[in-house]
Image (tube, rainbow, N blue to C red):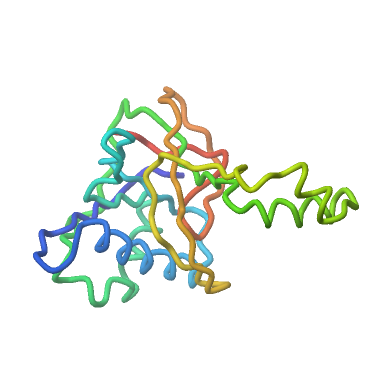
Length: 189
């Protein structure tokens, strides 16, 4: 249950842009979530905005009080002390908080990959797949994102994030090693 949270605030730095620092912080958290195999910790970005596009300068991590305490007992923040101010206490989610789903959105950005999928699934030739999926069939997303590297595969990609509408009741579920869920909600305040 996401009953508690911790905020990680980026500190101003003349050498690094806020999105670079947020990406580095998030990468460290991702590695910690992979290491612990946690499914009960979620992330939020209180500064999330689609206009202007951005995630803000605070990473909020949700979980039970025990799960957050265990996370903070790990050395996952090593190297970030000059760049991040961590709230000193695990806080309880405010009563009356709304709930929203924060999920990853994947763009259909590679026509060649889509063609290979069509060929495999439907037994098409390359020419047939090219007719179905032209080069201009690229989908672009206008959503906030983080540049991440998968701790398990090493693959680098842009992770676009979409914030769903506010609702008064939580939807419970599991969160992946990125602190995201396709179904569960996070407190929003």
